[in-house]
Length: 190
Image (cartoon, rainbow, N blue to C red; front, side, top):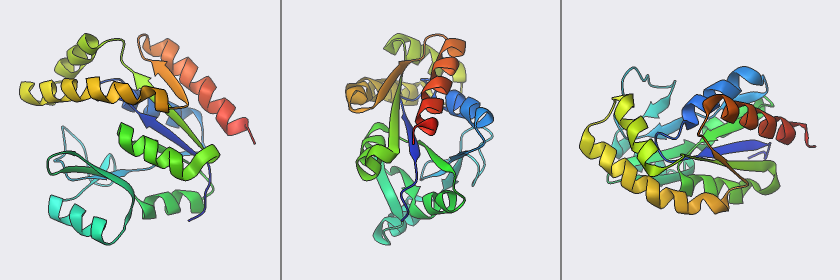
């Protein structure tokens, strides 16, 4: 597989990562989002092949056996997330920079694979309490799921020092400007 530049975003659920990635996609024509595969059910208006490739746990495990993933993780029991090799190859072939939205373990694994061709960014919530408030306001998950996500977030934040950049998303407009600057520097650095 060709090793073009890649940008890796990881963060606890509710940190604003998707909002920031969506913003960046409007700012740089050379960026292309790598659609991850997951075995979880769609939330809200999510569509297969747009936000994720939705697979059953059985389909996901079959693709693991076929070595179809660049990286994958079982984030919760029978809830898999992964990056299909075919997705990265599709974007690389077009000459675009791959943008990943992955969990922290996946982000660390991709960084190891791509080395200096990768920039990894950890989006940090201002606090765990703020994170919980954001997840509740989002209104897409049951309270039990939110509690699981908040507990997982505390663990995920311990990985932040393994990333090239840590950005605290406390003020969205300020964070957008900072992320844009960080990405522009990485793109311009030959």
